[in-house]
Amino acid sequence: MSGVKSKNESGRSGPGRLRKILLLILSIPVFIFAVEIIFTIIPIDTYFQNRFFLVNRALDYPEVFKKDGLVFWRLRPSQNISSKFFEGKEYRINSCGLRGDEIADKSEKLRIIAIGNSCTFGWGIGEEQTYIHRLGDLINNDASMPDIEVINGGVPGYSTFQGRRFFISDIVPLKPDVVLIMFAWNDQWAAAGNIADKDQEMPPEIVLKIQNLFSRLKLYRLIKKLTLSVVEKPLEEQLVKDAPVYRVSIPDFYNNLEFIVQYCKREGITPILLTSPIPSLEKYYPPGKQSMMHIYHQYYNQQIHSLARSTGAGMVDLAREFNRYDDLFDDAVNDPIHFNARGHRVAAAEIYQVIKEQDILGSMDSRFKRQALGRAATQAYGRQK
Image (cartoon, one colour):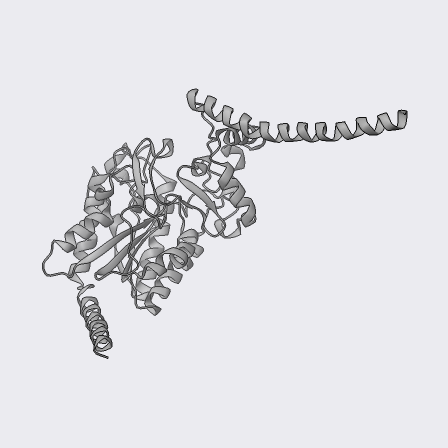
């Protein structure tokens, strides 16, 4: 009898154990859901700030960015973003993950795309105030110039290493006729963990997908913040001040830009290099102010001049033009990177002037019209057959 009893008890314990396991599994999403509701009602800062971009928790803002194995991060597509990261301002991101209107596969107009960092993206200003948008207005309102379409291909935080990859993966498929290229600030930034962009290793794709999925959970972000607060050293302890490592070295900066320029030339795309503006020491800072940041920024801009000379690529010296003004940066001391709406207006006007004076779009428009006529004739012949 005892054997039978033991067997019956064993039979009953099996379903009971299974029931407990199922309840435990079901309790996990219920717990997470409850915590998410609590964190929504009681806002908790779940972001761990670090000035290194590759480990910058600001770039972990899941409502803005997703991690990417090719370019480290990219903007999440198809949404209007209003985030603490963007200081409460709203930005419209299309299905291509770029700021602005949806982009058609084909265009009946010449297409100009600007690539770069947050300066091109238009940090802190309205979409219609960005220099690429204003440039489109200037050209399209000029009866002597062809109609164009402009696309903002700027992504906050991008260096030329990322820009080079992003250009091939995302910009070339959009079939640009002209590409405006402006980088520098993030290239000269301190490298995460003293490892340059080109030497950074991203986790496997499956890990990135899991991180992108869970990064939307406040509980996940809070655990991550607490963990990093314990294990990650402060910025000052990570920097090697005697021999700093930059995200992209000056020689690599030149090589990355040269790759983009030469690719454009081979594919019949017109590249136009833009130097990167920085607030003038004389106009924005106290007398006698010295700045290594300005010196290094000048080194990077010098590479742009050198590349334009060696390749014959077009160039617009925005840095020099900006030196004529004292009102293009709202807070040069705390943010010497992002120029204001008036700065974007000045940039657009200078680019427009160079394009017009050098008739960059003239011959291109003739070729474009010949191609369009050729396509129309082919289609008409096909219909007759």
